[in-house]
Amino acid sequence: IALIALLLFVAFGVKGAIFPFYVWLPQVHTVAAASVSSIFSGLLIKVGVYALLRVFTLIFVGDVAFTHTFIVAVCTMVLGVFGAVSQMNYKRILAYHSISQVGYMIAGLGLFTPASIAGAIYFIVHHAIVKSCLFLTAGVAEKITGTKELQKMGGLMAQAPLLSWLFFIAALSLAGVPPLSGFFGKLTLIKAAAAIPSYFMIAFAMAVGVLTLFSMIKIFLYAYWHQAPQVYAPEEGFRCFYALIPCIILVLLTVLMGIFAQPILSLCDDAAAQ
Image 1 (cartoon, rainbow, N blue to C red):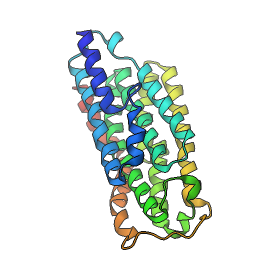
Image 2: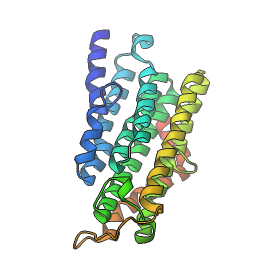
Image 3: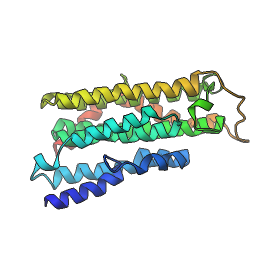
Image 4: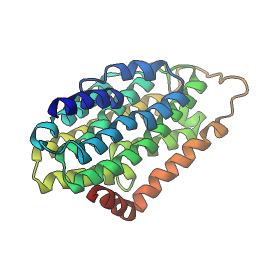
């Protein structure tokens, strides 16, 4: 049974891009269209995480000390965020953050308490919204500037202020800044770790949050705040506002998830208790 559990863990781990099965994901996101990356990161890799949550809470619970460990989650978080910090490609940074944020979800399973499972469920929904929005903003920025390289970008705050602020809000939510949804997702997982207690998990979760904020600010400074290195010529027929309508909806959702975090977390608690 333990062997079967590990084989399924590997299968779902490849799908969910967790350590050490994540190496395929950054290359895919860098070359894919922004709309594809948005659906892929926002929804499809969550299928693997969702399957892990279902299988390892309902079926493989006979040897929790062996099958449920948060070391894999810590490695996924740390290596993912280190990859993001080291990159200068807009979409590749976001791709590595998809890996890092999956680590938080798996951490809820590794801690294996009702509170941590509830936090993981909330975090999955939060990340699906925010990461979809961020990849869509990356696509709009690429349409305007013609590049994904941060060194060749700049001036988007002046040329596309709505795009800039939508990215900024979504980036703060990804980093876990209150009162947005990312803050409550991370807070729930940290409180669950403190109840065990697992200070090792808390320390890494908070450190990864700081590095996430650092890399999001790096994108904002290079692509949006700095002076434009050239005069951009957006693609013919491209209308920035219409392309940003999905981003507006998603940003509103992450704000509302933060404002109404308590009733949403109550639903997550009920699901985790089952």
